[in-house]
Length: 323
Image (cartoon, rainbow, N blue to C red):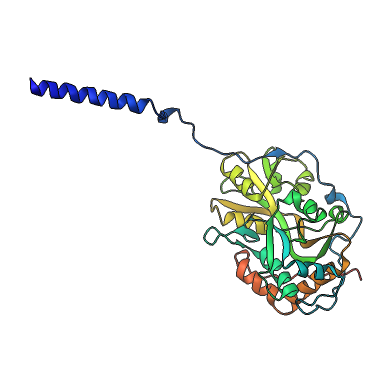
């Protein structure tokens, strides 16, 4: 009898415990919980960028550099002196483009070829490459960031074009790229002609859509906020391919070996430092820094350290000066 009473009491206690647990936070039924599958923000691009057809200028021409002042001793009243007075150089960069501007997941620091170029400019301004404030900007915000004085310079795979020159000035070109196609292996996409009836991702605010609009059979073009979003969209099957400059595409291949860069060149990119209009002295100063990088071997050293995966160094581009 005592044993039956003890068993009954135990069952009552267990029932109460279950009831009490049920009165708290409800544990969701695993079969009813939807899998998390975040989708990149994609918008269709239906109008070609005007820069592709604008040949009203020489987009790569820039002011001839003057002699570099001693770091920390910029000419009084110059934009360089104003930057030095603030104690740091503010530069708009990318944090999502592997090899050029990306956040190292181990150190948490921004790294890449563009970041190295920006640090060299800070070195010649201050004598210290760390006196720099790196601000992440998406491609579409590069011009507004300069116009609104949120940054002093933009070093972010920023191709010089005539259309853009209506709003900002550019340094001489420090890197020359070719636009190609990135697709999954065994996808059947080997050339630009294979993009007909396909969906292709580019980054909004870049020149990448232009050559795609020039194809005989234009694919559907979707714009993302950055190249990492294009990679995610391709991996999720929301697009069939990505088109952009080859160093950017090879950086994406390094993150996903199931992809490959295919086809011949369909466009070009000429990366230059973006500078707010009305600052010719700053343009000449930046060009002086880039001239130093070319002549003292720093450009090749930076290339070999950060872009060696792209193949042997092609050497720095030859500058084109207007005066």
